[in-house]
Image (cartoon, rainbow, N blue to C red; front, side, top):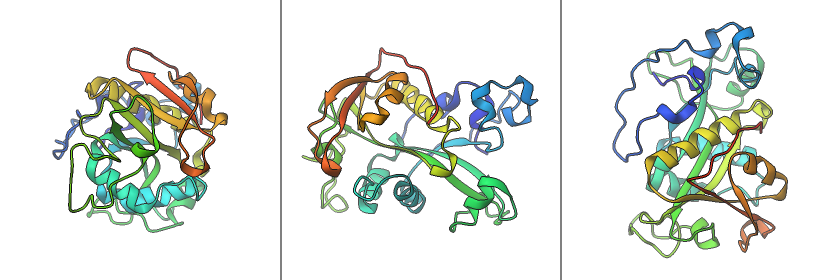
Length: 264
């Protein structure tokens, strides 16, 4: 069973090392999960997510339906990645992508109960098919040889299914030293609980610990600049990217920098 995300303050740090190979089974958590602790012992930022029991997993092409649904539930149509672009990223470099999950039965009440009834979710396991696995948030990423996100790094090769390349002119570049964060989102029904900050902090730490690059780069709207600055990113200025009509700001986290978390 996946380790509960709130088992300790390390969030995603104890996920297995990045690899394209199937992950080995994780040992059961030693500390008591936060959802079993008395509320009086929890930090204020964890109380908001106590009833969600979130946990993190790597993503792959099997998660395409859920990621496509979440992407379009979270972003404006002109900003959301297309289904094929998500499929490309989850297939080619799924080890760079993380999902934040919870689970619920159709009979459950509250936000999780409403969500589980909204669409068909996969079962947590075959032995208990009524218990559904719910994708609450995701991080989708690739790598590039540029120091910042470009329109080329946000694109993907049209023939990627039949002609895989380590260093294509557009899209994921396996030997790149910059991790491009293309999508960080939390389902709108669960905003304001700190889930975005927890997911971002754990994911950035994991990228740092993996030693796969020198930095993380992203583009964001001006209203999100402060959120990313608190997470350790530095604002570089207006981005040259024209994706989604332009109007973005370049932000970069060099791996020697640290940041704090905040609510999203």
